[in-house]
Image (cartoon, rainbow, N blue to C red; front, side):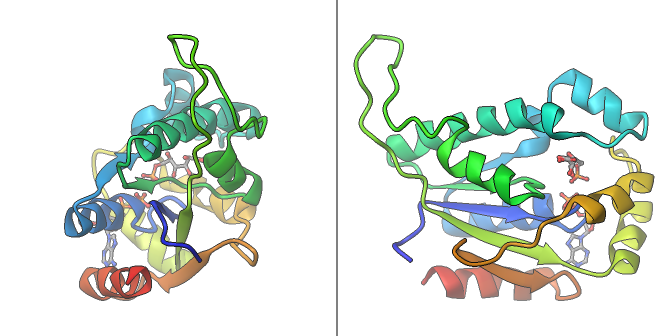
Length: 185
Ligand SMILES: Nc1ncnc2c1ncn2[C@@H]1O[C@H](COP(=O)(O)OP(=O)(O)O)[C@@H](O)[C@H]1O
Ligand SMILES: O=C(O)[C@H](O)[C@@H](O)[C@H](O)[C@H](O)COP(=O)(O)O
């Protein structure tokens, strides 16, 4: 693959996206975004009540995240995004937006140059038991561990032609970061 300008750290709740994403961004000197910070209040309330999100809840959120990636990449900024991105279609939205419209107008009415988000997908995989154990130990977080099964049910593991690697969450953080850094070399 051409050198990526963005890394997506994805996986089910509790797989380590936020932890790995923040560390990776700091190691690379790239900007870090946590998709959890972009959920509208309604999504957070739904999850807090133990109700899984659906496509209708997630698509506007993913479009917003695409806009964030696109804007940064357009300005030459490389980014790391921690985001569940459980389905292939969600990852496609992060890369292309929803309508696949290459040219858009900015506020001043001028056409923007086409911008390509070249995404390396890092899928953090692991067993239900390991991840649910981590969720049960994690404190002060809105996501209830009871939603984990629905996350596994929704998950579509990345596959070709997506540009991706999978790393097992039973590895320690420094091994995980080293594997991603090696892939990006
Ligand atoms: N590789 C790892 N080994 C051990 N613990 C980890 C690892 N990755 C994450 N954790 C811990 O697991 C919990 C869930 O991680 P977090 O980054 O919040 O996951 P996510 O953002 O995917 O929900 C946190 O308490 C974190 O410290
Ligand atoms: O698509 C979704 O259902 C949510 O984005 C979910 O997957 C995400 O994981 C939550 O935001 C919880 O946050 P944590 O992943 O940090 O547990």
